[in-house]
Length: 204
Image 1 (cartoon, rainbow, N blue to C red):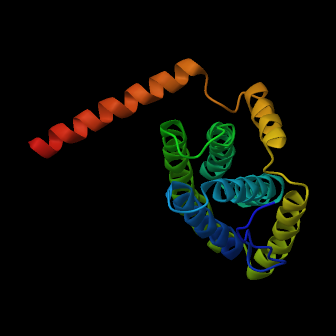
Image 2 (image 1 turned 135 degrees about the vertical axis):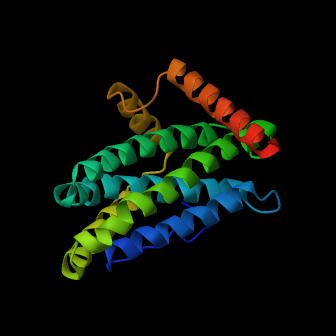
């Protein structure tokens, strides 16, 4: 499937396992940007880890977090699902490109890197930190075993394939988990305005 090691843990504290995947995805994103290495192998490895990780979280981890969370926690769980969907959509754009030595590829990887980086930071701050307090060590270990098993099963089934990514993104669009084209434009304009305000504050 790929020359990169995608890791296959069998158990452990679920928070540690999630963080290990976060570090792995950050590493693979760097390899996807590195024009001196095998970018295609890196993107295939990233696709496998990203999809397997998200599926395992959504099926087993997020429900457990939601049960123990306050209202703000439930909101963060749903927000996490939406960010997974956005990440998969950006990943699909990367995977559909034939070459990895084009400006189109680098632009698509930059977009994916921005979305993934934002999600990893937000998840660690708003979900993983509270979970350390909300879940007992026993619960985290039990959840870790389930997470690892689901993650490995997804990888065994080639979850990062182009066909599976297309299916996942199509289902997310149908479920309304992805922003519409107009919402994307509005979000981009909002970011631009915020950048302008920040620049003005810096100049002042």
